[in-house]
Length: 122
Length: 202
Image (cartoon, rainbow over all chains, first blue to last red; front, side, top):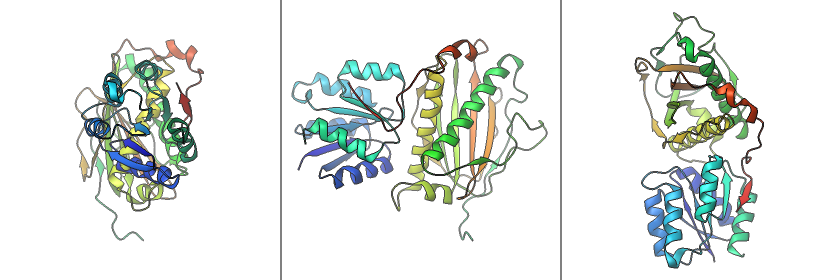
């Protein structure tokens, strides 16, 4: 079973992602802020995909993205930014830093699952 | 019949009213963007809302702001840019939070914060079209019986809404640089943005 990590400070959003991806056959791990998310990525380098909010406590999603991309063993993990924000400047920063995709909340479960399946090679 | 209507919440204080003349037009646009954003947000979750009281701009200074007698969940989130800073406060009757939460039995305080976060996201995305780029903080959920007066010099706009699930409230606290002119950027207002739920692959 492929594992996906959702990093979001909203418990409800984590539960929504858990529900959508769990039904599609993924094992979903959770982290409630950027710092915890970064720790889990380092502990689980075989993650198929990471879904990451942008505006979070401890470390922002872009901080997490840039840190992960700077660490050799983790740099290939696909990272989807999942956020309320459609700021083109932030999207460009994420693209330059190596994000795989950007989704504006509220997400559509079927499109989220399709995106994760595509990036996970499922 | 609601057995637990939640705490009583009164809005206290109007803040800086009347709005200083040099920022009145900008505040009017911001107020409208906030109003549009909250209606669109709840529409996305299947809840139609309608303004249930006079807006701040329609009230006489001596009139009390809308009262929120059954607010149970309140969230506030801050924003800032070079020209504009402030916060967006969202208050929900318990039934509104319960009627929109996507996970049955989910944490309603957390959900109120997420809605506030999504509300600011919509507000921010609208301002991008005017060339304004806001930095967002993280939301803070509270329960309260009373909100204190706005700080002196802060502009406050209130909206009260009704829905089939009950009432909800929006409060915008604004600190606007007098040099800000939103209309100057309106030419780009029709530029397409990434729609909610769409996936943009890089």
